[in-house]
Length: 226
Image 1 (cartoon, one colour):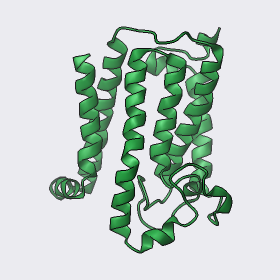
Image 2 (tube, rainbow, N blue to C red):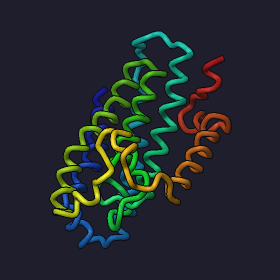
Image 3 (cartoon, helix red, strand yellow):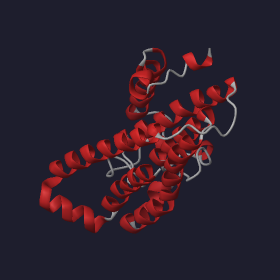
């Protein structure tokens, strides 16, 4: 359990400390933008691998009995969360977490102006239902709490950075998913959303029916239903 908490602490640090502008700019000035993003990507990936490895090595302590509808919840929420993460990263979004933080907002912010954070939390919460054990609750529950807890901080930082432009960019968006979508004048579709939808379908098909989930995590979700 100690190793799991250590791995989670490292994961949180890697995703929290670089978000501080002064720290990030200092690292970039020393390593260069390319070196920073390459090093950050490698470190984040290794930390995530360590975190999952420590979670899988923990004793399995069930919290509730599995029922087939639990898997249905996961099959619905996990792809939805994955779509929001991919679309959020690919879309221009100065209001929140994205690879592209300049320009006008992409269509995905019509759903929520924090698609990556909501997507990550939805994906995580979906995995808690089907697993129903202590280690999954700690791992995926921690992911969800971290993502949702970051929203107020990201909101405050975006307002400070964008100033009066924040109000213009945030029109037709909302923190809560779909709250502003019906009255939004933003486009419902654009290229990043279409690409994210296609990538989500392909990734989900590979994970569930191409053996991807079993290869990565040692568990076949579809076979578990049998």
